[in-house]
Image (tube, rainbow, N blue to C red; front, top):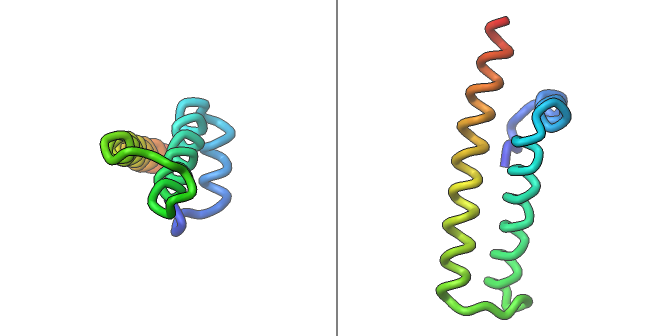
Length: 77
């Protein structure tokens, strides 16, 4: 996520916004769990996997919204 973002901008936002940083780490953790479950490394039932995917998507949507809002706000100043 945010692969195309300027590394400096991302690091600045991670450092300056606790909510963004925590949500970013949560998304990465969920991403790891989903990947491990899909690979069969982490045993998980279908309902739990579906729930994790929904949580991951919600976190990504929130992060994207925060990124766009904060990035555009700082760009206009």
